[in-house]
Image (cartoon, rainbow, N blue to C red; front, top):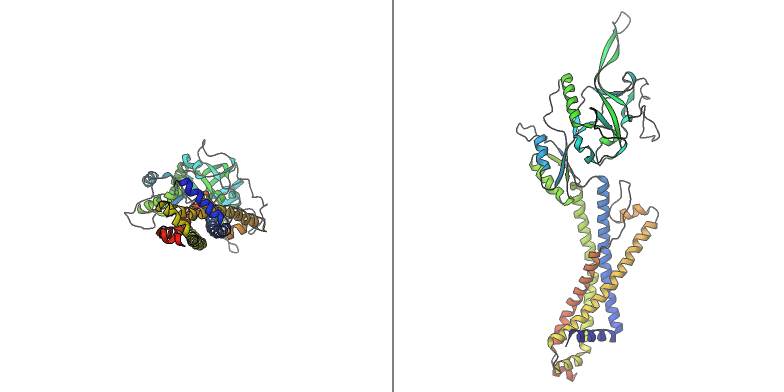
Length: 461
């Protein structure tokens, strides 16, 4: 018998018992739909977690800091170490991000150093790497022409106090009042790194105390040429800090060390390592740690969440697979009953010289056809159920938050939402193949039973 003849007999036999075939196919439809929907919920949950992590920080960025050990032979986070990091496999760049310690000095602005900032965050980055840091300019340009040009964070001007106002009214609280204006506009302002000294104005008398007045000694002038949009993924300095070229910072550092007597820093305070792909982050991070440095990346958060999502996907998929297993038992039952009813037909096929392999193929093909038909309809039904779930959740009040909670995580960072159920093509293809495989597996025993029936006994029945 040709394959075409076997196929015709298969279709005819299934069609002849329409009711039984429909009930068996229904079981496969329910099982296939269950496994697809369950796994799709797990995929939706993982996408929600990935979205949340992406909002929390750059997933391919590693922050490297010096080792806390005080061993004389420890590896320093210096130019040599930065060069070695840049040459590691899958590393796209290693960027120095040094912090300037002003010590007792302050940043001042305005006439006669009126506005003062005693706790400014000043970051130094190599000029060639400034645009690679992911900063977003809202005004101005990057420092390029004159020395000591700087970039200011979005809220930098709010960090200053007004020395001419009384205590309690000398700061601008922009946290409680977003419309509040700073004492001065940061863009284009000329700042001073200055040393504050107290100068006596009179000697204490019999009935009076000594008085003094603040006197400022300017160390270096800075010019704000650009302002940044706040982005904590790129760094806290984009909010309230000041960013300058590393070469300018090193010159300023030397001046501060002469005044304060500080020792010259032997290593950088921080290095940002950018990795080509998220899959390589863990490997690169381990190599950097082996060099003797501390590291931080989103990998420490992403990995446990990914493992948790995978476990939930397996659990949900397992629940769906149970439904498909029950459907497979239904297929086996249908095929065994079919053999009992068609015993005489099997005997005639053997008597006319039909090969045993052809008889086995016919029953296996019937079982596979039931699996294929049920799987195909189940996948179409799964897409419909998935669409309804996503549509209903998006229409519900607070739909975005509902999506995130249903998918296993709340969008804590406040941006966007995700869908509850996601059915990729690979899942649909896998479900169809699995349904066919389960059908064939369920039909294997009945097919072998049909082959073993004696032709003479079969024709007597």
